[in-house]
Length: 471
Image 1 (tube, rainbow, N blue to C red):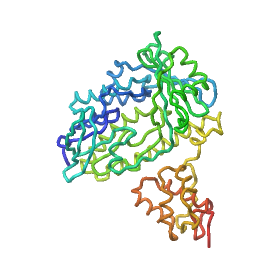
Image 2 (image 1 turned 30 degrees about the horizontal axis):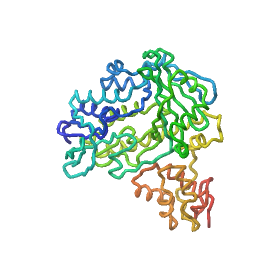
Image 3 (image 1 turned 180 degrees about the horizontal axis):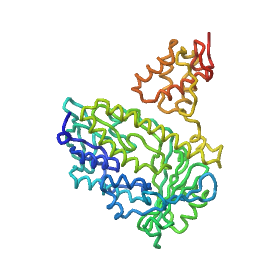
Image 4 (image 1 turned 135 degrees about the vertical axis):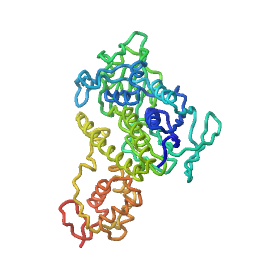
């Protein structure tokens, strides 16, 4: 057990998750340094903050300051989803109050500066260039405004967002479930727009689905709105971002009307919005939080809230780790995978509400069955072995798309000789450091059996997908 005051934490990334972690760790008595690659003057897409985030900001002591910033209050969500008519979800009776449409650079900077006021060190325009775990902690090298700076920390937190800069440097890999991107334009008007309070109906977040994706619009400060088109990356193959955004806008109704009183953007910004997670979200002396650990579809409007919550929770995990709980990081990984799997179910549910384009690839990809929804029919005692006809690029590629991160080629190689299904799953989990749930692995095994890529040597006690059985 070590005293918090003797432990120095390095946090890679000064966004909402990183700053929330710093504020929570400081409350626990730890020393904290935030390593932020920008100066908070870079481009950052504004986001919607759900009413429930008010309680998180309150725990961080930031709610009053949040209400005094240039963020625009949001009274609810107005959507055309599953049909062309608009429907309102009003926050009027939400126990937390209204939501916010954020001015992201200012919001992020305020969180980080509050952490500094409470005792954190903030290193702006600084990148982590190397990290080596030694017996007495981490030796790191930083590039701070062009200068090489050595450093030492007892624990590292990856809060670098979707890039997962630290975790991937340490060998973790990203598992992507789609190729969603956002094309964002900022539109301005010379005329006064909606007031910033959270009762003005003109400040409602607007959502509208389309054949190849969906749109959201939100009011910002300074007579501006943000308009983002969410679609698959393949749509950009033959079009420039602004041309694609402008063409797709013409196919909308409500978003197009919403934009009519604003000037067209001169450019649009393209950002990845993939649903993804790390195969390892923690390891000896480090963990990943926020979007660095796993990132949600923007449809959830939960990105910032998740970052704040993850930062707060990480402080409890780190405290437990330094209090001698050897399973603290392992438990954190398991909890994170469960949270992500629950999100996948919720995400599929939202996308399945849209039925206007049943043959459109964008919607089919997001409405397909999930592993957790498939019945388990595999006999754990059945001996499985790879068919001689297996060839890379066949069903294995399909199963990798069906369940990203499950290495079906590895499953095949482990089944080079007849092996009980339960043993095959155990061997796979050992070699992959349990990056997938057992259920996910079972789902892929069942898929390969159904396609005769894996054969079953013994008869199953169970009814179900046991195609390919041989005596």
